[in-house]
Image (cartoon, rainbow, N blue to C red; front, side, top):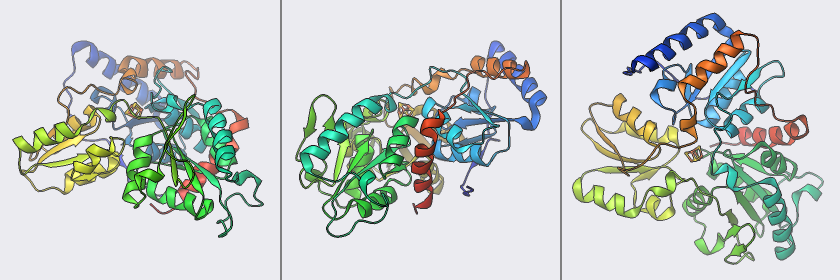
Length: 384
Ligand code: SF4
């Protein structure tokens, strides 16, 4: 499978390093030179500069997985979090190894939906609503007839591989923050006019995307494991899992108002993982790549407040010295799990690869590869 996507090769960094960081950086460069074309280092936009400076490519989770899929490198070192490395493993060949420099680098949002919790919710929602499970249809992903009413699962890329497998097996689809609307349209076509979608794990991305598509908030109840539905399941169009991103939920309406009071001509752009109230009062919202493009398109001298992870905001400010760029939350911390990828861990895995080891390999079990790949391939088949 080959898909062309925009990508960001890394050539702009001018990072000041301490003596210790410089020594680590020098050693990483030596190891990279030894491994040559056998090595590909991928860096997510939310990584710190001292990691990004060593990345062959910088991008969002989906773009980086695609880079991995298109690469012939034997060793793919993914400087991101666990679910991203899993997706890269699903999309790469058996003779390629996906390596996460620190195995503790997970994602708190992805951890908010486990397979066991989703399976319980799935059965309860089917029972309470009388909707059909697409798994029992002759073709689980054929568009629904007017008489059919199904429950279709949609999972955000930020989820574990076993959930992607669940979605693949039950006639559902994966989405990213870039293509969430397209994925929901695809799912509605399979659910039928009276069917519904179970969207997990990020309630905010689901709610913001649904609202932008004209769906009433009353038709988007939330589901909390152990508690059940908040709101009416009957007549719902999207049932939102209770999950959230601990970084993006920090951006508030009050912060937007404070920025606007200080900078009346200022522009606010936020990520759709932010709460809906914040998205509603902002000038624009979109994925990390959307935010990068949005900032680039603003006039020189523009004053822009951004609601997303601080490393990316700081890098945008560095890339656009002619614009005033600030983080909407002046006390925000970096994503704590992304921050677990320290350069010393990167150096360590490269040392071990040179020594003949396959350290910290992320390997999705064969039993869930097929379903996960189905769900990812359906996503690749839709228009954004
Ligand atoms: S920024 Fe949020 S969604 Fe992204 S990895 Fe960190 S916790 Fe997860």
